[in-house]
Image 1 (cartoon, helix red, strand yellow):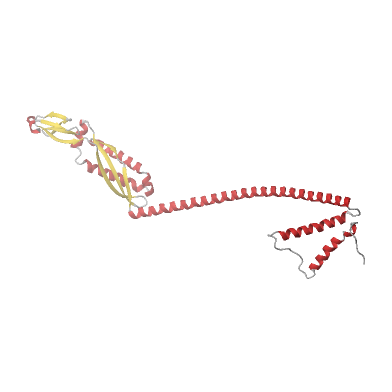
Image 2 (cartoon, rainbow, N blue to C red):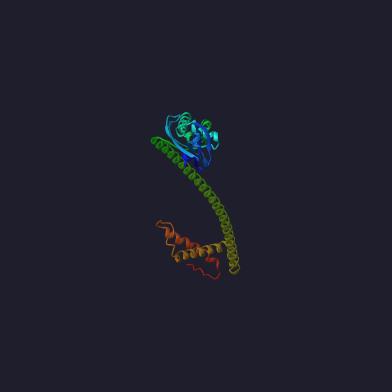
Length: 305
């Protein structure tokens, strides 16, 4: 159809028309007519789509570590007639031109940065590439839309070493955190134990106080009971003094105590003097204490020989 002068241009391209070998016009999308009889011919077409070029650049950092940097360049031909004319006539291979500028920027900027900072400053590297390409390729009718750094790949041994360093750092932080946790737990347990001890001490003190009051009241009751017993005994039995009554009561309590010890199944031992004459002395002491009260009672008859 072009030989007949009828030209159809797609929506995603522009066609350049020459006349006698000289630029004549740019055909937009749709149907157009050229006049072969007037030496008008279609020189070629240029795509207006956004194109992407991935470039791998090998370089080394400031600390002499070789890395591979991947850059994705997104570019597009401007839609105006002058830009399409420049793209058609001024530049033979735009992809090779873009790649050379990207390599130049990467190999001039990355050697100024340490490896650790390369990962942090990749946005600055991408901005430098876009600025350089935008200024250069703009003269040829191209717009640079984006130049992101998509990957930074160090040498395998360097990557393994970085992983080991990172692993050791994480283990060190974990050990420090575990130590802090143990320290906090120990402090809290000590504080809880101190609080528990304080509470227990207060409770024991209160219990001792109450027990002391109980013992004091018990002794007061015992003394009161003994006093009443002595007074009653003296009132009923004439000629008996207080000491004799107390001796009789002590002997009675002694026998009650022995009875309770013998009747308690859990009491299986009585502590007493283990000398050979202990039993005789004990017998004489009891008899002496018991019999010393007999003369005081009028109803008791003492036999004299």
